[in-house]
Length: 191
Image (cartoon, rainbow, N blue to C red):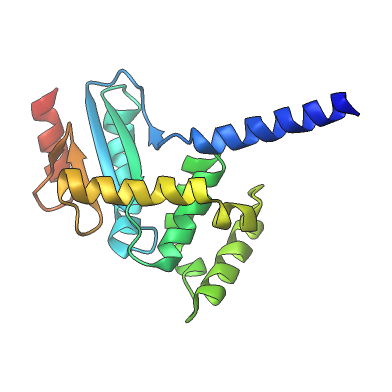
């Protein structure tokens, strides 16, 4: 009995530590010369546009070549974005895939007039996509909640983020119009 209890406590402890030690959702090599931080809200249509029209080319030209690493940080602007951020952050092995799927299919899950309706649509979307997530546990996990909220607090404090998407390149706010041409020019100057 003691052995079984020890195994359960160990497994539970490992699961909790993985959430407590949550890592940033990112793409690219740790050793990249340039780090981009993208503060985003999962209900922001401009953020979805960034993922659809800018990120793929950025990934091809700079991230996949090892020059740039991008970190996606949470800056939820409403309850639906807050809960979606918790879902994206919850499954560390699929976080980037879930994040990309939420942006690509944003119109399919941001429906509803109440938080309960929005959560129901988000849960249905996640289930339909086949992600293995304990939805209720992720939505109510205080460690994940704190992780998401800390991203928002740090963004506002350190970079004066007040809208999304906000792009930070090597700890400096990107202040030009956000399109691939402007982003590419800025990155090429840093290489």
